[in-house]
Image (cartoon, rainbow over all chains, first blue to last red; front, side):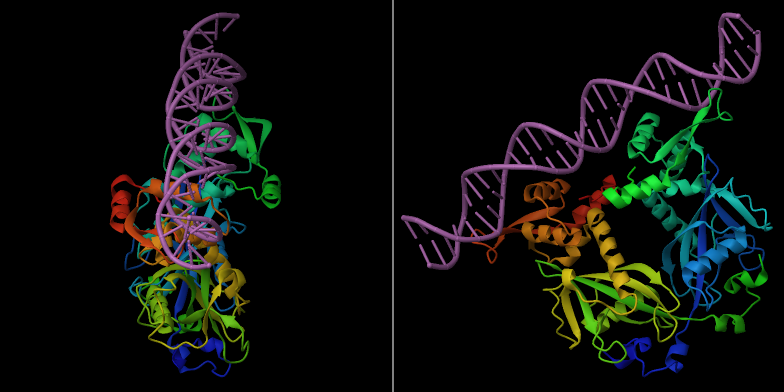
Length: 244
Length: 244
DNA sequence: TTTATATGTGTAAAATGCACACTTAAAACA
DNA sequence: TGTTTTAAGTGTGCATTTTACACATATAAA
């Protein structure tokens, strides 16, 4: 192994020097923000209001700063746009094609976020250029953002089948139909109502309330909440896996 | 959204400036190299021969250069150490804790690699400090490398169950027992021989040769090869999923 | 010829996945 | 007040998959 291929950072005798400065790069964070309005899966995009690609849609993003790690940068970027923190965020993939950003070399770490659209009305901050798109008819995006979204959708699909992250996209109280709508949106296929309910119930992590949501039908639909403590206890004690 | 939070790279009117230079960082690539010797899953580590942490073990790594993307950097780093290219590589996760490298701020993108240990005897390059460890008794590593390895193992486990990547760790011809050993190592649990063979055969992507490996028992064991074309055709035509 | 060793092979029971259709509650309306 | 309308709510049988499990075989070495 050649000396110069060693990570200089692991060699205390070599300090910040030309070689390293030379190879420093700009690191960005881009966020794929998924939302759910109890009917359809959405994605939050912003419209570029400057050239080039003016009028084209894009993910929100920002640059990593010296005093934060990537997770923190993603939280900051998300909060800047939506005014919200306490949002489910997960690192997705790092994109580094040399010409991915024609302006200059930028490496971007993609994160995806899950938000309940209705509970989170972006009161605090005015974002004229931001818009929720139905995931099925989202527009073409700049750079490699389409690829990021594709990967995020795949990741969400996989996660939703093995972790109870779906509840991040729902209000605290929800109906079975809404939960099923969510899974149908994420998986992009119709599910059988009875089988779905049986499956969910067999997992034994929901609490059925006495309360009904009457807005949705004459009969009204029972509301449920996700019992997070119960879920976590099951995971810890029995190695339980949420599997849909 | 504040102007300074916009990604400057998306604004053609703002060129490389102080703000950006300020926020540039060093990007490293670290490789978790898994190997298999027909018996046990291994990991390739190098011993640091300089302070601090002299004598401690570490993943191999290097810095991203201006003229390459991360995948290329990982290939280069791997080739530098092992003299080999054409190795299965997959990006894992990006690590960015501020103090992860006490020497200086470094963000590291972890990759994992899969190698057949026996077919790849590192003739070309002398690496005194490199050593294959059985995955079960690998030593403690520097920085956050332990965490990287943990995540790589989890990823490998998941992938091995849904993609035929196991064959990357085996020679072209292998016995059923070797394949089972591999899966037992990856999944870290014993499997039933008959059920394993039935399952593999039902996937219908292996070709049983007339040839036997006589080194392994009195009776000898039939050799198999993975029929990659057949697998890819099935994937394309029937949406087949390799599922173990 | 015997012995030792790892290979190779099938079936039955259990668990899980999947398809499928009618009743019910309550509001709206006649 | 009865009839209609709408979505909610509920259980079973069949098919598939998964799991548990034990003995015969080929061959080299003694």
